[in-house]
Image (cartoon, rainbow, N blue to C red; front, side, top):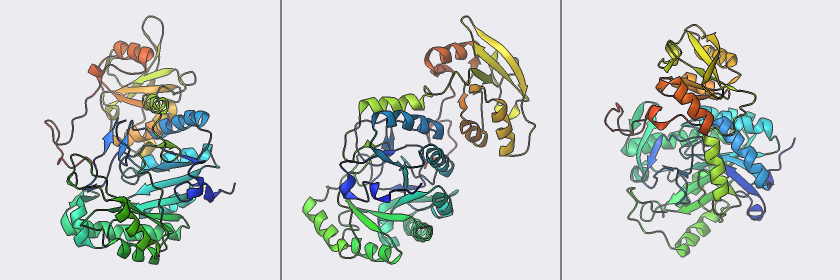
Length: 422
């Protein structure tokens, strides 16, 4: 099926009042820290990038999209724009795009990235027929970049100052070349910070045009509380127009940007609908899972009474169903032997195709990823299986007191650096 690339409202202003888009917030992590950004989850009060009311797993995102399509039939574009960077969470991003492409082959797909880790996935994006990519490039001068970025994390190495800006710029240029080589339409976003890069936008435009960028979006800084740039004053529209006018002589300009949230849905500039926010939160809670096809709950347990075993240490899993009185043991299934990497967890997910949830006392990132992307909900908890099962049956959730609690970065009990866990 040939995609109609003219339908993207961000790249074609004629479509912004008739064609809708949806951002699926499946990428919570970020690999850089900009001095103007504060990512917020579960927030309805701000309309800007980095903000979402929930974070979804890929299959939850597809379930949410299904529900939204029933209510917003003019949707033509599915995008991933955070709330972090899509390629700080590449598995989640690519799996979501794959699921959408399979079910909605006519849909335009797009991603928005800082470009640090985009290049390795350019061919994957082309294979999935991602038609539009946005890369935020605020400067091509590391000295200016050192004033815009607090740090850049490349795998396990954190850079600061000009070195951080230089690493980021090198990767951005690689990513832009890779995206254009893959035949994808490319937009450059540039956040204009008064007194820092406002006189530099034309220089960015010259280099981006030379690399084949199709359009540029000069966005005035939106000062965000609790960030280093919180004290800045937003640039007057007259000055923004002057910058855009100068840059438009070099590369076409997008002039109708509405600073979309990471969970934006509907027409550009449309307020968040409380109904759709509720749908998204219900999706994140797993309430749209098909329980009739997957009626059981798997548990990693040493004796079948308590949730008390790490999945990696389990040699068997207990399979329960909920009846009107108490959980009923349906079966005990052998867990795959150690070794084999992700193949081990794919084998386990296949054996649990009739389960909607697995309860464990602990689980690694790799098995969680494989199991969740097979449609299985993974919950870390401790306590009585009967209590967890009753709560799951009643509300779709395990009691908060039983759930394994996440320690925030830098807090007591966290062994991290305070700069965000990888």
